[in-house]
Length: 124
Image (tube, rainbow, N blue to C red):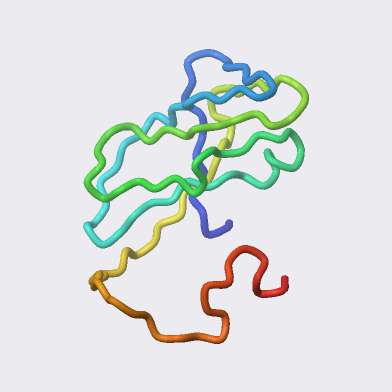
C-alpha cells in the first residue's frame, strides 16, 4: 500500500466524463482532522496515464476545519469519454503537517546566486 489513502467514487449511478469535461465526484465520507493537519487530494497515476483523467486544482487542499463531504474534482483530458462507477478508485489523499509561519514585511531581501531568476532559470 502506498502513502496515499485511496478515495472511491460514491456515485449513485455511473457518471460519464466527456473529453474536456470536469465534474465534482462525491466520496461518501466526511472527516475531522487535528488543527495541525491538512489533507491533499492528488490524482491517480494509472487513471492519468491510461485514460487522461486527473484532478484539477491538484493537489487540492482540505483544511482541518472543513466538515463537509470530501469530493474530488476530476477532468477528462483524454480523447474518449470515461465512465466513473460506484466504488471506483478516483484519487488519493495524503495528510501533511501544516507549519506555523510568521510573515514579516521587509524593505530588502538578502542576495542569492539565483536572485530573481524565474521559470527555467535553474537550467533544468
